[in-house]
Image 1 (cartoon, rainbow, N blue to C red):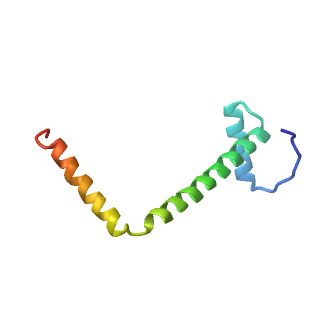
Image 2 (image 1 turned 90 degrees about the vertical axis):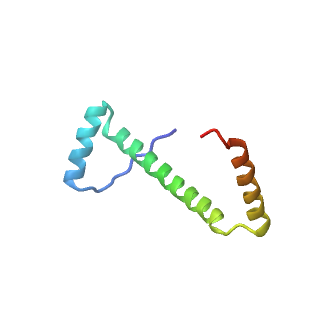
Image 3 (image 1 turned 45 degrees about the vertical axis):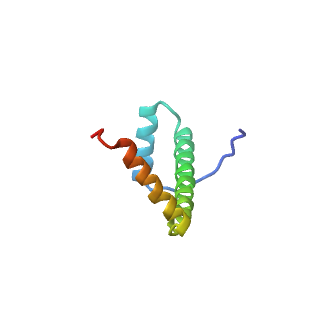
Length: 84
């Protein structure tokens, strides 16, 4: 990966915290920002994926799906009956 220099503006307190964290992790401040940005991007992708999954499952199941679920629950009850 080819690195490109960029300038950012952040508050003094945040910069001090970043410098402290970088020292404790034994990485450069630049590397810390790269790690943090990669983590943030991955977190956002996961949020988007979860939203898509939730949207897909938000719809009520159709009649055939409900019947299949009832049948599966009955079958499962029969299989585990007496095990508890």
